[in-house]
Amino acid sequence: MDRFVAMSVFRKVVEHESFTLAARQLGMSVGTVSKYLSWLEVHLGTSLLARTTRRLNVTEAGRNYYVECVRLLDDLDEVERSAALLQTLPRGLLKVRAPVSLDYAGFGHMVGEFLRQFPAVKVEMTLNDRFADLDEEGFDVALALGSNQKYTHHPTHATRAIARMTRTLAASPAYLSEHREPSSPPELKQHDCLVYDRGPAPDEWHFSDAKTERMVHVGGSFRSNNSQVLKDALLEGCGVGMLPTFMIADELRRGRLVPVMPRWTPASRTLYAIYPRPRHSSPKVREFVEFVAARFDDDARWRLDR
Image (tube, rainbow, N blue to C red):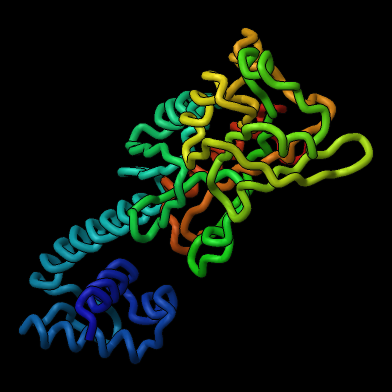
């Protein structure tokens, strides 16, 4: 028989001074309670209870054993409560992968706020623009821009859209001084286009105006899977590029970059959080995803419904 169950049965019998009341509280039959007590006495080699037709007396050995049972069972309850608490409070190391461009969206400030709210968590952040396999590389959460079949069709990973991010087509004044500025998507074929080399069709650029949508195949002398590198090349006058608006907002404001084809709006991209499905994820992962989603939603620039 289970020793701890037997100890619990003995405790209830002593506290209620009744087999019947103890059985009722424990959801057992009186016969089962009697079997546990008999087994415990045989296991200990001593009598714990003196049974008479009128009352139930606890022997001296029984009184001493009862005190120890209460201490051990209460300690066990506390250990189990502590273990359950660990499963509900965010704590430990959280490994996050995010695109390089998020550095320009104030993502570091979001993480700092998260750490202040959950001081038992430590974050290890990796910024890069390549595909990250959570299982192989040990990340707890990956943030990714755009749609990626490797993420959205994974059997054990959940994908959640958390922000909408606009893009701007831009070039440097130096580039535009030497090249005629395009006025419509087809004219981009005559330009050196800096291509962000990720996703299923990086050479296809999509635009829309008030009436229609257009797609154009672009190409040029430079492409990269890193958005920061493309931004640097854009500033050097290497061509026309399409980057997240927040990433080049300061350069647009200062005139170091100029919007191109302002009548045509580049297709926006969605920021996704990829993480283990809820039944497999830990509190630190769940809280981080909820926190980041809420912070992006608080800012009108990022809302998914805009």
